[in-house]
Length: 548
Ligand code: TEU
Image (cartoon, rainbow, N blue to C red; front, side, top):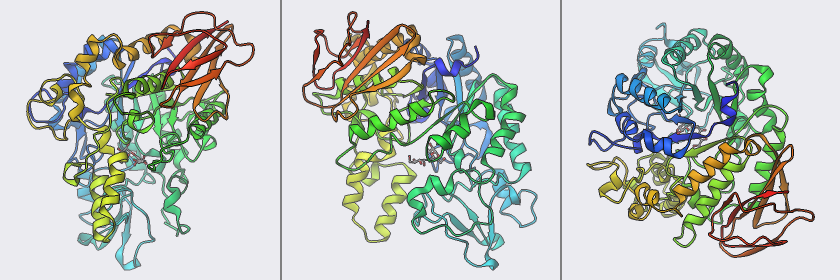
């Protein structure tokens, strides 16, 4: 069905932390296969799998050493085929992660490229010959010196890596490289997958003269690293040569600096990609004071109106690069965790755009908040700590921030049940399990009709049953209200009101004049509801109300 990707809900599985089946402490494909009926019970239509290709795990699988081999710790290609079959048998599509802004430095291409300046693979990457002097400075996301150029003595040259030293950037200017990527895309598409998420692709096009960038450019990295000179030429070629030949969904990670840039990726007439996701929501002040709801409302309203006529967006509040959404956008204290987790899931599942739900958020899993650097596994966290240490900086301050914002928070093992290691593994997990797994786990929540899990299932069923929630117009109400996020969705005669109390205290909210509630709530994360012209809202109460 054309545009199936507009009506699906995507469930992101972080394979390394989902389910271990062979007792090595890491999740694997057989583990996911053993949980297919759980996925079916959620009602999700699509699974996005983080990278499962061979990788030395410098960046937890985002450093790929062989695009056509399954990471041995995750299983075999037969396991992959069985997983795809199992998903498709349950009517669930599979979207894979396409990580081609860079490869691993252990990829055969890079081994060849660095061996000599005349090697045929040399220009699969970006090199700067040392005799030209120091390369023009470029900032790196993960490097311990934040330096994106790495000197390689073998050919007395520097190579570019926007991410870690072990993630050299691929040179998309090279048509041979582009054809290699298209061939590996066909390899997976011919196996029957249903789409790709293009990792960090907005950075793939570089001005290979590497001109100086203005001071402080790294504070606005998407503006200076994104949208390079040929980015859209590459995407249009990729579409012509590969994507247009399959009924698949594509989503760009990152969509430029705002709706205008994003439209360049997803305007259907441009024949590039289907949807994109922006970071403006999740990048709202990660400071200790948290975010302002008025900013949050403004961001999601602005992006919705920009795409009201054409193009399409994803809606997400968390992924493997983010802390847990209930800790960041809700309130994970025991008194409010479940209610605020339900509220955030209500937002995701009643907004316009394809929802991306991150595994564990349907349970209300929360940040683990490590205090010891030895517990962290993420290259971004560990190199960040090392950099502060090298500079004699404030390590306590770094750890206090990491406790709230580190990517490790969202990567702790899925909490299946109250047995050892939450049923994730029978051995030592690669990353510690959150000790709150005894209370927060799928088995306990499956049996509890009032759990976050069962609320999620209800919300999923609701979205599927009502076209108004899929494609209906979105209209923000009561914009200045700093505590309540209220909006309507309407399609033809059908109109529904969503009211979300984003605070930990009771609030009263007067219905707009002329609003008439036409029946019982479609969703309510509290047991009771009293229709009134002024609603009495419990802390973190979420209501979805049909209107006359
Ligand atoms: O993330 C790309 C990216 O832009 C992130 O580094 C993001 O900007 C940052 O985490 C702040 O939100 C993708 C993957 O999602 C990430 O896991 C990888 O580490 C990165 O690319 C390199 O592959």
